[in-house]
Each structure stands twice: as C-alpha cells, then as structure tokens.
Length: 352
Ligand SMILES: [Zn+2]
Image 1 (tube, helix red, strand yellow):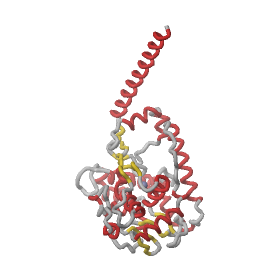
Image 2: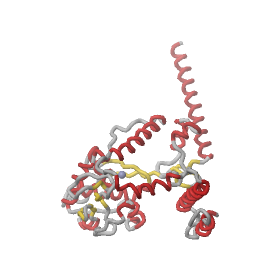
Image 3: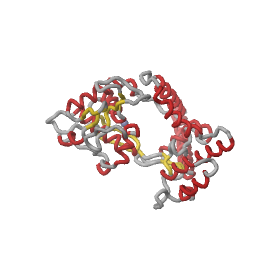
Image 4: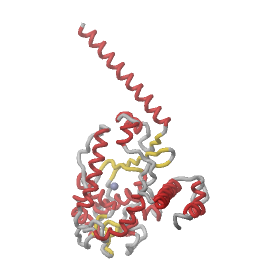
C-alpha cells in the first residue's frame, strides 16, 4: 500500500466501518469501531502529509511506536530517571487539576518505584507459601494450588475467570512471549525485564513487578492485612482486583485457618462517557480537566456533574446532564441564600 492507492485499499478493507457498519458485520458499532476510525484518521493524515511533504498532527501515533522499535533496547534500564521523570511530570499535572477542582489531598501517596524491594519480598513469601512459582526469570501465581488449599479465586467476576481476552489484556502485550505458565489463567507477580524495560534486582534476576502486585503490597503496607473498602473502575474488577485479592489472601493466609479476607467491600464505578462511547485516550474523544475548566465548567459545576451519576454507574456527559446539573446547582444556591436570610432574620430578632 502506498500514498497513490491508499484510499482505494482503505475503502475496500474498512469502507463498511467508515459508513457506520461494524468490523464483524453484526450488531451496532462500539469501541472497537471507534478505535478503528481513529487509526484510519491517523493513516489519512499520514498519507496526506507524505503526499504534501509535511509534518502532520497525528505524527506521534505513528512515529512513536516506530522509534520505540528502533531505539527502545538502547536505554540503560537501570537508570530509572527516564521513567520516573515522566511519571513525576504527570503526577504534578494531576495534582494541579485536583487542586483546581478543590479535591483534598490524600493522607498517604505511594509510588511503585519506591516499593520494588518490598514487592520482591512479598512475592518471595507467596512462593514460600506454595502459591507461586518461578519460571524463566518470571514469577507466576499458581491458581490451582491456591484453590486446592481451599481459597476462592475470581470472587468478584467468577464468570470472567476463563476470559482469554481479559487475561491477556491484564498481562500486557509484553508478556505474551513469556511461556512457562502451569495454568492458562496464572498471572505474573514478577516479570523478567526485556532490554529497555525498567528493571530491578531480585532473587529471580533483573525484572519488574507484575501489574496487580503493586496494589497489594502498597495497600497492605499502609492498611495492614485487611481493609474495609477498595474502589476502582468497573473495568478493573477482572482480572486486576480479582488477582489483587488472590495474591494478598495468599500472602496473609495461614494454613489450616481457612481463607483470609483482604477486602470487605468493593465499590466499582462506571466510566465517563461522551455520546455513548467511553472517554479514553486511545479513542481521542476526551477533554482535559484544564481545558474544561478554561472553557466550559466552573470547578463546582464539574463536581456536580460527577455527583449526578449513581455510585455504581457511569456518567454520560450530554447537554441534558449539563442542564440537570445547572438546575440542581441553582436550586442549592437559592436554598443556601434563603438559609442565610433566615439566619440573619433570626439573629436580628434575637438581638433586637
Ligand atoms: Zn489496583
């Protein structure tokens, strides 16, 4: 495919989707179709740029993966500043947004990079309990051994426990090539680092924590062996939270004492969506908080929009929702000013 026959080939392959159809030819278009349209937009822009010999807006989407494939291996992965500088930048940016919205700071903020030695000790303890095993420099959780000892797995989403797509998404594309698992659902507690990936020393060689283990170790370090409430987005229920539960309960359980309960209640929230699609970076249908506060919202107005959704539901940003939120804010403002008025009158009568 080249810039000359691009549009022909595009329409032959994806005309259906571009005209409002679905990838499979069945049902209604959803997130997958929206993503496909986003990729096609990038390709359209790239083709136009090549034809006109210009730099184009979506260059990062196409150039970044390419540069990564060429130079990723050349980074000294033991120098973590290249990774922590980026996270620090976004952390500061996030805090600025929260301050602008008048959201109070958390009592404790933990960072995975400061916890890696403790994570390695935690993983080692799970191996010693017999619920994890090392394989080719990585460590995996042993679901079969865990259940055989009388512990429950996938309590939050039992129907998803064999969902291959969710499992793979949870493990990340990087680990697809890592073999050596005993059970198909076994998930990584520790991953052997490839060239260019951040790495730390461990009893199993240079590696990095698996995704789920970070939360288990940091939360247990601050809150102890159990907690009342754990929250998160609904997409984290499986495998992330189910795996967090399993590995934490594996760590804290005492043989012969029955299963350990790490979390008493989970609160899972829905997503923020716009025009029926989940707001996400990859779909590019997002608006930043900074942008929204500059153009469309007051900090309080935005907080009210989020409060209009139920705790276990998503929030759909629509003109309707805005009106509802504005009406609510006005009526609260009126009641508050009436309330002041009544207090003033009462004081007046008392003092006079
Ligand atoms: Zn987590």
